[in-house]
Length: 264
Image 1 (cartoon, rainbow, N blue to C red):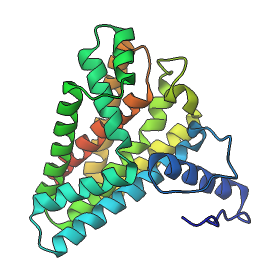
Image 2 (spheres, rainbow, N blue to C red):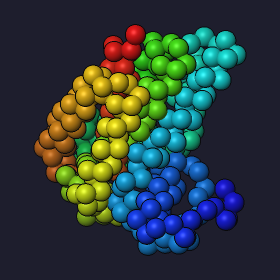
Image 3 (cartoon, rainbow, N blue to C red):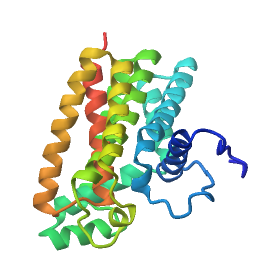
């Protein structure tokens, strides 16, 4: 990305703030090299409204990869796996890494302290491998089941966007489990920012998947998030950067699976 990446300094203050948050979210949630010289001290939580926009970018990339693979008449499952791989490459496997660490910690941790210690270990264990295999397999299988590039593409975009739109709400509702670490450093978004991010994700669900499927998924995602947060509170006493990745991956799987049941 060139150093003169547009900052649109002459736009109204409210729009300029949105643009800044989007750039911060893209810089953290993807591998896109975006300069942030004008926001050196901005915490990630202060860019919460940019999360669903970063998800849109990731989803569009995955949808484009799927469409290109279909143009070359590759088998649908191969195209779906390539789409997932494209999204993983764009994000650097950020959320997949969080899912694996969370699975290892919650699956193998004897108690809270041990679980948090396991989650900090960079090595992946059997629970992490199993969780990644299931999550990637379900995502690819669901995308392949949708088949047509337009239906699959819309579902990929909806899943990538809405799953990341949940993260600010998790950060707002649950305190960090550790006094240090990514969750603590990221900070806590405002209630308004969390609501606006979630609303953006909900709007994308409705636009991409239709009214009925969108409303159903909003309810299911709220239930999924509430149950997972309750479990995290019981096991860890809070959330971590890894558990945010697990929430994103779980929500993406839920969205893609439901999309296969409501798409003609």
